[in-house]
Image (tube, rainbow over all chains, first blue to last red):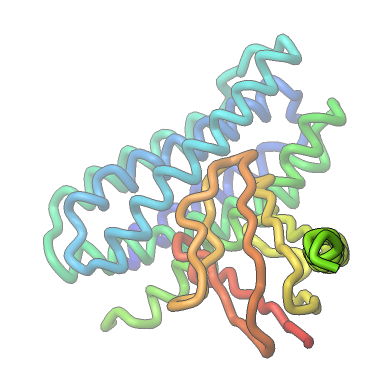
Length: 170
Length: 109
């Protein structure tokens, strides 16, 4: 589990280093990929998680990131921006697929811990990515405002995931 | 004398209605914005009889729930919910979807 969390930290850390000159189309692709990765993990966990609190959190991630994605897609459609795949969005998508693959091998308490550990690492690194790369790089004012507006949701999710993590045995 | 009685009664009734209308007019509606997974303001001071309106500006649902006192149930993105406070004191409430969202109503007489 720690290995999976370390992997995403490393992947996102690498992608943050690669995002110096992102354009708005690339930022849009990163936002959509980041949301989709968490929606996919949440969909698996809302059925497979053992504890009710983990199931409930997973369900919330599906709803919340679905809402953020809908808002992001509506904005890029309005701005006539076509999301452009890039190394960061690809790394996020690949990392999400690896996480799903790992989670599918686990059951019960081990599944809960791996899922929640990953959620903590994922949200922390997503916040770092938003702060270090996405907000500073965004050119369009509305896209920048959207990133600023959704950042607290990631912080709220991180705090919620940390609260659950503290209740799970190491 | 007998003919005056209905007129006096009408005056009393109208006065009563006006008093009620005045009280209703004095009730204030306070707005609490839900945005960025947070209630703003987190502590709201108001008077008994006032209304509170929660407006959800996040792109996903929230609730305003004080167990045993009030429960908005799911407030959709862009949606609102109103509650009239009828007691005095502090009411702590949360969003049941996001337990780290906590806030308080401080109700004065």
